[in-house]
Amino acid sequence: MSLEGRKALVTGGAGGIGAACATALAARGAKVVVADVDAAGAAALADKLGGTAWGVDLLDTEALAGLSLDCDILVNNAGIQKVAPIEEFEPADFRRILTLMLEAPFLLIRAALPHMYANGFGRIINISSVHGLRASAFKSAYVSAKHGLEGLSKVTALEGGQHGVTSNCINPGYVRTPLVERQIADQALLHGIPESEVLAKVMLTESAVKRLVEPEEVASLAAWIASDDAGMVTGASYTMDGGWSAR
Image 1: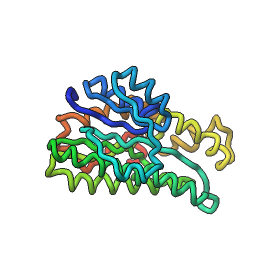
Image 2: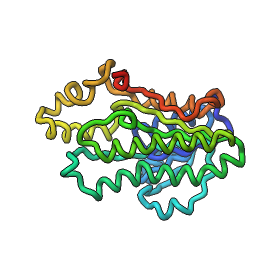
Image 3: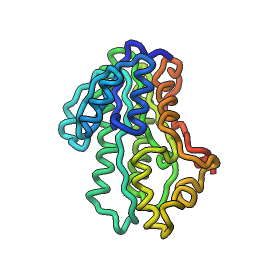
Image 4: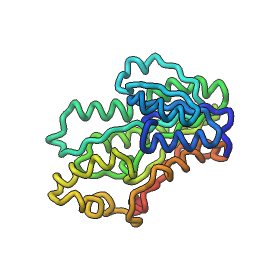
């Protein structure tokens, strides 16, 4: 599954799933661009991987609209979370999450496709979630954004197929990342339980396998999707949720 000669761009690449994906792609020979609003974190990882860093605020959609990208592999991973009932959910927070997790991926795909089409090869890998396929209370913006990303990914697959470009989603359950860890206090408050009980009583109740997903597990699947071996894999949503979506 060598990726020698390929250039990959990973958003939210300074930590969590993004850093794991960047590391896995680089290990297979890809030249990786680590993109993150945390410019220092992106630079530190890029130096370690022999890649380059891109300090970027993906909420600046005006700047992204005029962008042109020369990557062969695009991993749309950057994301944020807010947990609150709909009636208490600030509209500005709702818009921010949709901008970062749906509009920005659209703009990056739009910027990358001309190069991919010209070369007859491209891999769009969208880090979605089980929440792209299922819903949970108190996550209206996140669930909406991930459901939208699923649709965007499938449209990209249909348009890109004749040009050698595939587009797929990876749908993990709760992954051991700072994004998940920051939810624990909010979930405890909303459900009226101690923080120590959130994993068992909230996050892992639907999973048959009672543990968090590791970032490296997501990255291993992303690396395979990026390879030539996955040329016939497109328009798919790969669950990695411990059996959550089997219910």
